[in-house]
Length: 375
Ligand SMILES: NC(=O)c1ccc[n+]([C@@H]2O[C@H](COP(=O)([O-])OP(=O)(O)OC[C@H]3O[C@@H](n4cnc5c(N)ncnc54)[C@H](O)[C@@H]3O)[C@@H](O)[C@H]2O)c1
Image 1: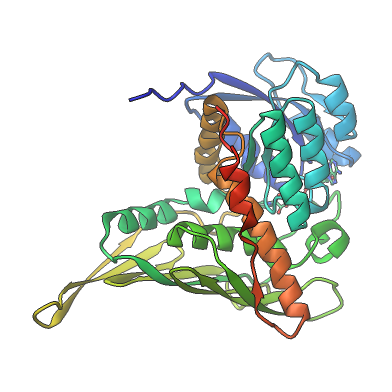
Image 2 (image 1 turned 90 degrees about the horizontal axis):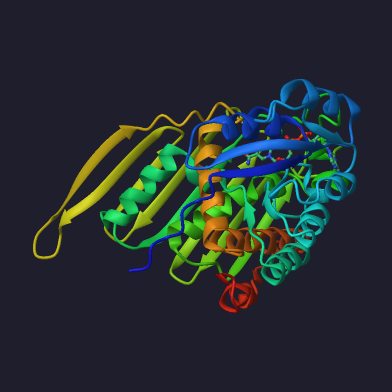
């Protein structure tokens, strides 16, 4: 058996977009202990108040001052040979441009969700990562929530059989806000966000569904609506067809509560997740006699109310370091992130066209098949 390469001891990184998630989520997660030590040595942010915040907050391990730039281009020019990766945490409208530029400079890229604002941009990022042999890694941090890891264990145990139906609901009583110093409500401005709640939360919803089915969907029908004057939707629902079953999702910024509710149904049982609560109902008997249900309930503390998700990010960053060590340039997570983008774009097209069901191209799998992992 071949031994997996050891994760790098240290990775030197630069953050582009020092806003809420990089200050409150990524930065503290980089500082947590793990197999790889992450050293953030540079930042680019177009907002002077945020650059000042970075100067006051970030302390590289050398004890020197963090190097701060106004644009990602200036950062990439000045940091040549001094960093290993770029962490893209700007609003989605700029993800593709920054990631492509960083990959072209031979840097690995960690990119916040959504990977981009269109399927075509996402595909270009994937192809470029493969060509330049650098890791493109999306922040699919919900997969690292303890409760979601518990779901994976139940699925792996075979207790509920093979998955044939999934429902996913994400309730929020408002959109998430960006930092006050820049544009607090950019998520409601299409030119920055590329869309409303489907663009903001669709990725988290769809990559979980892909993972639970173990495959990608073949068709989608979607509906969306918006209250108020913003040009992005605040409610989104869709029905997805998978080769092995169906899924539905409802995402809302006008709910009366902040909560996720997921249900996963197999041919021998089901799992229900409501934030930290997991209930598993598994069938026993039933072949020659009456079926009996064994129901177990557990609480898996996952800190859903804390939007910074520090613990989840540290677990994800370990995965990023492993991908670098293994030369997994365009891996499973990256492929899922491109599929998410194709799905979101197709969902918008369906919603604009009376919710008519649209097929999804099978083409993406081809990117991985053509050599995503070139190690
Ligand atoms: N994975 C998660 O759980 C999670 C949670 C929150 C946010 N996010 C994602 O993180 C990204 C940022 O969200 P946020 O809430 O931190 O936003 P934010 O508004 O708080 O921060 C964005 C920062 O980017 C800066 N910026 C804008 N355009 C820039 C550019 N072209 N170059 C450099 N800097 C630029 C702004 O000045 C600001 O400091 C989004 O993609 C969002 O979807 C992910």
